Image 1 (cartoon, rainbow, N blue to C red):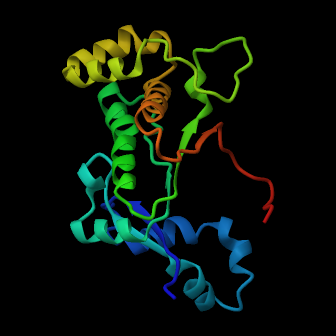
Image 2: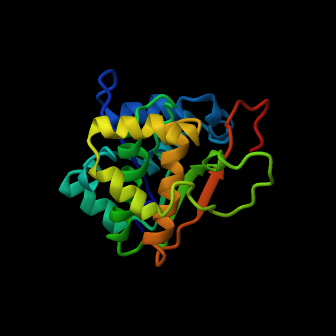
Length: 219
């Protein structure tokens, strides 16, 4: 029986050209894994039973087929049952053209690839509770509220036709008068497009708040 794997899409870093090196240093060398690591008799056992299950794949969500090579794409398509999409630009000062390409178009590219996976069971999209930033002084329920600017498909179609200068004007004159930044707007727009376009796919939505440090580990 083949070992279950978790494929992690990673961009190539100038400082860490090795994807496996990034996985080791940026993920498994973190103190958050100390408790799990302590449950094994030695480091080699931890590497064999945990680290080897994580397979880094070179890619980028701003590119077609997520920047994966044809061979990598074929492997991911054939093996994957669940996709967890948590990639986003959380630089709140990103100009609208950049935020739109990463947070909105990037998510649509992820879903497009997920739909090509014959064994796919679910795609979990990690969003933010701050998509509801325009709703002030009221209780916010667990639902997708109407986009303040009208029909989401119409808004997205218009944005896709705009030049970079027009997008920057739209950001200044429209977006930032309703949303605190381009991040919350593009994440909100993405939720609406997902809801409209991919009703046949099981799409659990996680709207998280601020993530901070933990005083102690609970596992």
